[in-house]
Amino acid sequence: MHVPTRHKVIANCAMLMLFGLLWYLFTRDQSDRGSLMFPRPALVRDTFASQWREILSYAFTTWYRVVIGLSLGAALGVTAGLAMTYNRVLYFLIDPVVELIRPIHPVALTPFFILWLGLGNTSQLLLIALGCFMVMAVSTYVSISNISPIYLRAAQSLGASKPHIYRSVVIPAMMPALVGGTRVALASAFALTVAAEYLGAQGGLGFLIRNARTILHTETILLAAMILGLESLVTDQAIRLLFSHFTRWTHKPIEI
Amino acid sequence: MKPAELSLQEVSLEFPTSNRPLAVISGLTLDVAKDEFVSVVGLSGCGKSTLLHLVAGFLQPTTGHISYRGAAVTGVSSARVMVFQEDSVFPWMTVLENAAYGPRARGVAEPEADRIAGKYIDLVGLREFAEEYPKNLSGGMRKRVDLARAYAAEPGVLLMDEPFGALDAYTRERMQVDLLELWQAEQKTVLFVTHDLAEALLMSDRVIVLSRRPARVHTVITVPFSRPRNRGLRKTPEFLKQQSLLEEILHSFEVADACAHTS
Image (cartoon, rainbow over all chains, first blue to last red; front, side, top):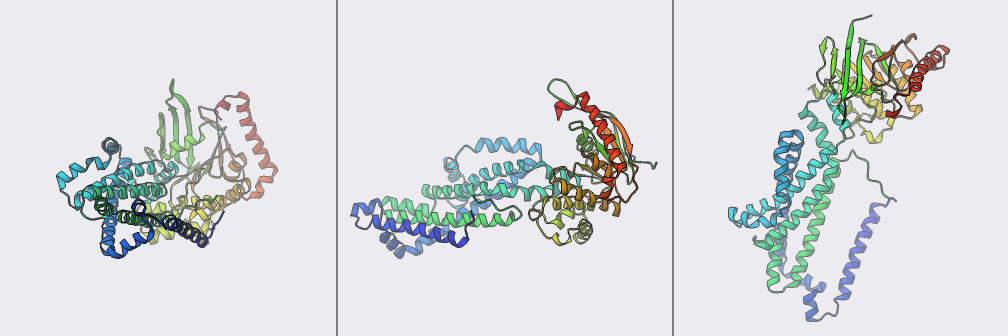
């Protein structure tokens, strides 16, 4: 079924408005205890109105960490994935390291990052990058393994060298399968950033949530969570837009 | 006969299997002259495609020698470009970029590569689609891109592995005529694998009938029809006579019933 873009936007807005309305209706006559359990929209709005400078600056800090960490991790992860398929020796060198570290959640390694690199931005960013690296390395490797061998054979037969095949066949052909991996990496970048901020980094929405928690300021927590959701949504859309450029040669997915 | 451009001497190939080696090709000898169009036919599973993969350099013979212009074939080279049955046109490149692939791969500068590509795109009648992505083309048009790309790589030998096998009957006949015209415009040494006997007769100077597996040359038929040829040839009594001759040879293999379990 084909749905015009305008209708999709209307449907999305309607759903969000419905949620807003339900939120308003269910919390309209709440007690003090009720406003602690789930604050009404007005409280959240007032929190934003009074602290918006600080909150937006924290929101930017979080987003900046996510983007830098993801970019760094993705660049290294894609490189590792390419290297693993380029050369069997590299595969046997990189694969066991990736498979050994991958099951360990990067948060479990936070103490080491803090011990080695301090509480500063470097240790945060490396932590996030490590998580994204694992996702991207595996995702790149799988994407390349799934490229139809017929393209590689054709390129070889037409006289292309291995580096040329990588530039002209492997990298463009892996793009459609890499979208999923990149979006998963983005989600884990957000999760890791908030976790890192919650565990001790200065600034950011995770830091805001931790501080608000100690004084039971639930409207701040709810506001921070909403901003996180919004940031994640916008960044995810940006990634999809970027990939739709790289994969403009593919057929549009069939709408059922 | 002109000196052999491509020469296969007593070529054999065995694939290792779990219990004992499987002989796919056994003592196959074949010479192809420069600018000769040679078709290879045989029952399905008899080793036709494998033969082409050997000549392309994707596989190495277990024994025997393959040489091209006197030099041994040891690996893949753009001197022997392969056209596959499957659609191997790069979907992420435009028609022009596809056709320019061979020249670009060997380091020809972009304007010159585009000029060579453009020439063959014109020859296959796709000039107005040069900037399109393959997703916007029909199967027959993509096959023409494939032919233009193979020609633009300027190989000495074109290896075609049932190139029109995946097309519908009508498109296939059109493509045969188009390839005939392309070949007439620019002659090339062609080794053409097909299971379509009429196609083999229409296109070729010689038709090689391979025996059932392990493959060796069973019969060689020199096609008596003058060039340039057109699709009308298919209807002539002489053509039909040659075709039924080939059919009978293949039918005799099927009676022997040796290849059937592999098809």
